[in-house]
Length: 317
View (cartoon, rainbow, N blue to C red):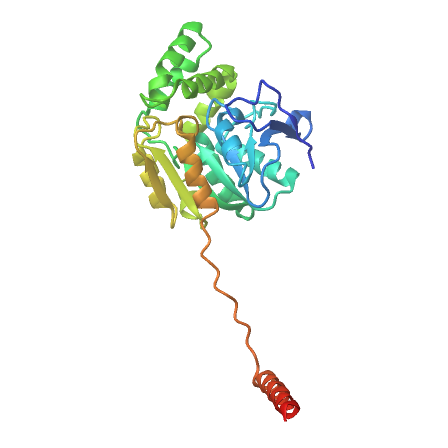
């Protein structure tokens, strides 16, 4: 089993006091890295899968906020963090990377939360390896992007290696990713993540998102699923979450009012509370256990009491 190493100040970003450590599995050409909170709780494990153009660091508030009740692992998808890139990025290929990580760590079945493109990866993982997944939390995600032009497709041309287009991309992307009242901290961390992502990796993510179609896979899922979306999400609007909700049997849908696309950074406390309640619901009070007692046992007890009473009366006489 891989042993995590300290992630260092460059990776532990956020106001919390927990130490975030980085672990790696696999040989160099197929290496996968992940983040975990040192000293996280045992019991249930949740795997976090980030979205397009960012890394496991985008889950910093969940690594810190959920580790008191869950064992939290955040995967770096191929091409970011210390994970090696893959030749042809796809949702299915990313799902196999997640499967390799779980197998290498020997986790057994886990809960899986995916944000944006990571939500599609989580669906693919559950469909391809159902024995690995206890349930899903799908955040700002969908099963398939509309074939008509979407915000993601409208900005994809900006990913070409041109300094002016790159500048315009970062200028434009803010209004698609964040709600107007998102905190400066959320925006700064999100933009740091996007700027540190290699252009070819970001382009591969966008290409994978444009061709993915998980509608049939979603219909075949039979496991607990929570779908969460911000009411002001412009990249994957609530209508796409509603479609996903209709596809997955028994899924729950939760809309966070006033939030944009980057829920893990924008509304970490609200999102963490929903994840905790879903993964570890309040257990009903356990009634006292009644132990059945046979008639012979009751009879012997009564005879013993009667015998002691007679003996006590005899001593008084």
